[in-house]
Each structure stands twice: as structure tokens, then as C-alpha cells.
Image 1 (cartoon, rainbow, N blue to C red):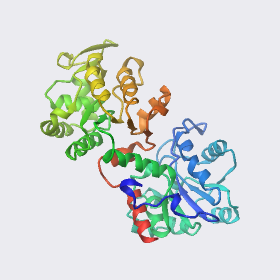
Image 2 (tube, rainbow, N blue to C red):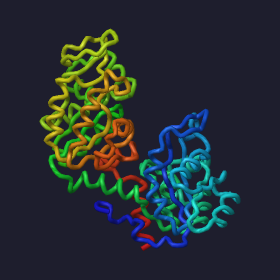
Image 3 (tube, rainbow, N blue to C red):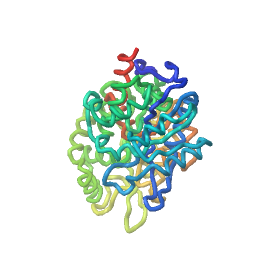
Image 4 (cartoon, one colour):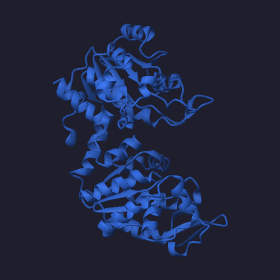
Length: 408
């Protein structure tokens, strides 16, 4: 398991005849009216683990959305979709730990797969608690009574300190599933053992996370270059003293990131020669794409993409890199006029010897382009992945390490 060798995996335990509580993250885009799952990528990623548990009873614990959201719904459709992908029945139980759930688990046979109802229907799962606090919840106590072993394969939720994530490893022997192992191994390799030069491409709108990643990888000598695109680039351009236009500044303010400009100034002062910020951009002027240097932007026009001249230094850095970590698009890729930068960067990054994608929107674009097989690793967890890349220990991983010590 590389950096996280203290975690145990499926190869370390005998699951024969056991009842396994398998925590996964099936939170997916869904049509709230029809209940139809619009993207089943997270289901497909978990099939390897479920198939590896064919000598056990598998009880799936998962969630969809959270209270107050339109797509916070039952998991009937999820069980149906998983049944189709597995090619065998996944029995949906309209219960989490009551009599109905306990009876279903007790009566199941080895090889059976059961999916419990949306675990976030239980109020305790929506609390942020420590492992010790979680272990005392009614939810964890009752779920634990139904299983012999806990497997966490929910990397997309690994940054959440919630009862099923951090509490179940307190009370049951706990290991990582195959997806969690793959995520941790590939992301750990970025920090040690990745072929150099290493370039991080940071874009999209989650600016504070991206700036945290930039600071961490530059301060610790993990990255040789950081390439800023998207709103992250706009922050760095403002930090360099450019006037980036009212619409782009308004968006930064609206997202609550004005304070990040000062942080970007500090990073530029310390690591300026390692940071690439394209200064040739594409704006929307009178409804059309217009390319120009950032110093010439009219004050009322938004920056929505890289310009073709701005792309040249970006591609130059990417082509010289043996490792590329890509997180976030380079512009408003949803509009075809402003998808150019994102698509060209993806094509270049896919050629790297070792390439990692931080999930989210970028992963969706890559799949749409048919480039998913060209990348070494595409993460299933946007938030969890970026938190991992800032150097923080994810609660799920800390809980698995603790369990490995306790249950050796």
C-alpha cells in the first residue's frame, strides 16, 4: 500500500463465509423526477470489489445526496442499476438497521448481495464526529451487530468524518476495498516515486483547494511546475497586478475567494519561476469568442478560456513532464466556444508517462472524449482527491490505519 502500508486490504484477510459490511459511494447524478441514474461510473468502479466478495455475504451501505437536496432519495434505482451491471440480483432492503434489515442479512446466503436504504436517511450519518464519538451512535452500534468485517471502498467520501466512515472501523476489523487501495496507491505515488519532472495543472472554480495544493506541492518539492488555468489562473493574474475585468473579479468575489489573491501573491514571490500562468486569454465580447492579452481586456468582458497563444507555454511544460496531475477545467468547457483550452490540455496530459486526474468535471470531460483509458488513474472522488493532494490525512484512511493496529 506504499505510503499507507499500515492499511490492510482484501489480500490480508479471509472473507470466506463472513458477513461483510461494504461502504461505497454511489452518490450519482440522478433525475429526481424519474429516479433514473444519469451516470453509473461509480457503480462500475466498485464491481471488482463486489465480485471479489463472492465467498461472503455482502451488505452494501451507501448514500445518495444529503438532506435538503432535490436528489436526496431512496436507493431503489441504485440497487436495480447495480443488479444490471453485476448480472445478478442485488436485493434492496427498505431499512438501515431495523428488523427488516437484520432479517434480510441473517437469511442471506454466501454470495448474496444486499443493499440497505440510503444511510443518510439516518440523522446520525449527517453529523461530523470523531471515530470514538461515532462508535457510540445508535447507527454504528446496530450496523456493527450485523457484520463480521467492515470494508471501506468509498473513496469519494473519504474526507468526511461521518459515523459509517470513521465509526465502523472502531468496532469491527476494517480494511480497504480494491478501489480505495487503487486510489491511495496512485495518489501516494504522486508524492514519492513519480517520474520527474512533475507538473500539477490546477483549474476549475474550487480555488482555495487548488491554492492549498499548489502551496503544498511547491513547498515540499513534490512538483517541478504548477500550471494555473480556469478561475485559479484568474486569481494568479490578479495577484500579478493585471486588471482581469469586472465580470471575472465579480465571480471571484461571489465565490468568496478575494482573500486568495494575497495568498497567490505570496506563492508567486516564493516560487514564481515554477508557476505558469497563461496571459493570453479568450473572452466573450458581444456574444463571441475573442482572444487577446490579459492587459488588453475590456473591463466589461469575462475571461472564459485560454487563448491559443496562451496555450503554447502550457503545452510546452506538459510535453516536458513525465508526471501530470490534472485537476479542474481550463475554462467554461460546457460552451463549445470555450472548451478549446480544456480539450487541448487533456490531450497533452494523456501522453504523460504517469497521469492522474482529480475526478469531478475533468473526469466527466475525459470520459466524454473517450480518453479515460489513456490516463494512468482517474480518481472517483473530487473533494477527497484534492484534500489528499494538499497533504492532509483523510479521516477514512486514518480510521483504517487505526483499525489495522487494533485488530492485528
